[in-house]
Amino acid sequence: MKKLFFAVFIFCSTIASAQFTESLSSDRPGQALSSSVVGKNVFQIQAGIDYFESTSNFYPSSYFRYGLSERFEFNTGIIFSGNKFADDLESLTIGARYVLNSNLEAHLKSSLQFSYDVGATNKNSQLTYILGSSFSEKLSYTVNLGINFDNDFGVNNGIYIFNFSYAFNDKTGVFLEPFGTFLKNSFQFNLDAGVYYLVNNNFQLDFLIGESDGFFTGAGITWRIPSKNN
Image (cartoon, rainbow, N blue to C red; front, top):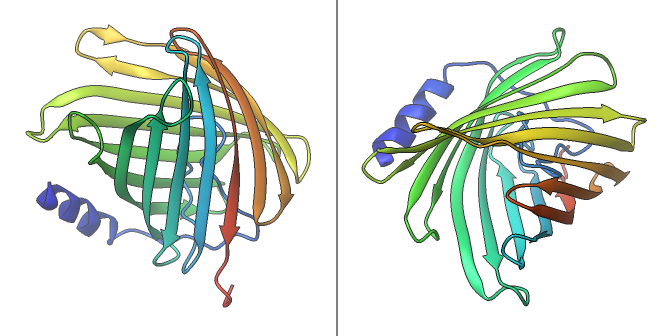
């Protein structure tokens, strides 16, 4: 596991850099990871709660991101589950994200995220390629393609997410997102949609609904704490 992470880091270190943005870039709402990192010395909290009809469980979650440079961040996330609120630990991940390429003129950015779930019943890792771009000034898309594998590097499944976002203005936007798993002679298709509202450059509210073996819904916040130097 350590060798794989080191190899990914060395590979990424040979490729271009990113830029700090004036407003936050969140992985919320939805399933897709953003192709951006938070920026050097920036700390960001993404927290929310989901409810799944199929299990009658609530899933409160928190995701913490810290930028070591303009192109590299460490992140960790925790998810609980329970029909009352948070009875059990569902997931505890540690990971890192690195921007591979950022072409501002083409509105194109790609990155890699590696995460290891130390809290899952069956420990697993995930490597995700992230591509973000736009069709126009208001319509953008993010693609996630990932592989989830066990401690012996056996492939559990493949993961796909296609997030399409439309910004009404500088503060409000909506998204539609097909997502699921593939490989091992199976294909899963799920769908969610939602809305976000940027209260200010450092604070965002969001809400979503979706279908994944039944109805689910969720809401949350993103809070960015910029470096004093930014």
